Amino acid sequence: MDYFVLILIAGLAVMVLAKLYSVLGKDVGAPPPQSQQARPTDKIEAAPASRPSVAGFSGLAALQKTDPGFDPSAFLQGAQSAYEMIVKAFAAGDRETLQGLLEEEVFETYDGAITERETNGQTVQIDIVRVLDTKIVDASVERKKAFLTVQFHTDLSVIETDKEGNSTVEKEGGIAETTEQWTFSRDLNSTDPNWRLSAVAAIA
Image 1 (cartoon, rainbow, N blue to C red):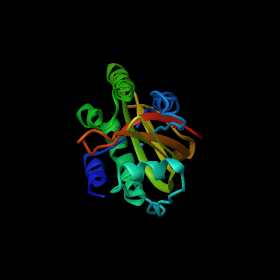
Image 2: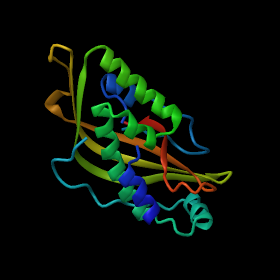
Image 3: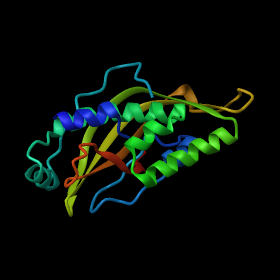
Image 4: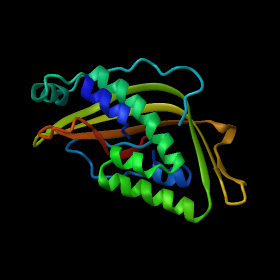
């Protein structure tokens, strides 16, 4: 639906692999009610992403009852685009973009990782080589606030350099297969159509 497309065009939800992985692979944000959590990543160069799949959850039915215009397939497509946007913003240290896409607690974690990187004179390059699968794995509605957890199965390339330009982190072979879950939330009473990343967890 249009409101979700807006989210993704505006952006949604990357943590820190290496240092990045220390943040990226760490649970961030308050866990949503009876939901799982999530985590992040940059540019797709190889095979196109697989067709998003939608699992059946009672939470989805509750969300669609509250918001009849909600379209799970459109949400997933948007979430995949958001995944790419956030990775790019994190790698670029683009706080302004991230602030509009993340809940405050998650933003503070990203901001802290960027600040640490800047203080140490480090740079990072995170590329999404391929998106293997994208699917909704949990959904809930609590006090008019919706939570949707999306699982991303991707191949990532992560390179970090120090202030001398020497590589400090590079996954062996250049590619790391990862599974991450991002939980997005939205206040259904708000006129703001945007979903924001509210929790992150590394699955593998």
